[in-house]
Amino acid sequence: MDQTYYTTIRDLEQRGVDQDYINGWAGGYLRNPQREEQRLTERYEAGYADGCAGNTDSA
Image (cartoon, rainbow, N blue to C red; front, side):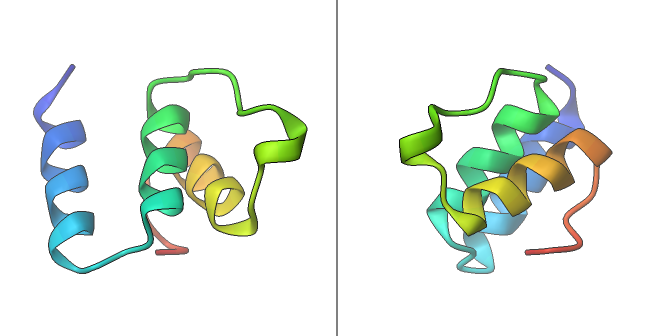
């Protein structure tokens, strides 16, 4: 993993961003498959989309 991953996760945690968003962002950034449908939340999906795009616009 590159430094961007660690730096972004640390920044999101320090800012008090919702943990579901952070988990989604990490999964999207690493190109992991999304959670099962029954476990998806709006915050997770926003984080996942931002992670895939490499930004934190929805945080």
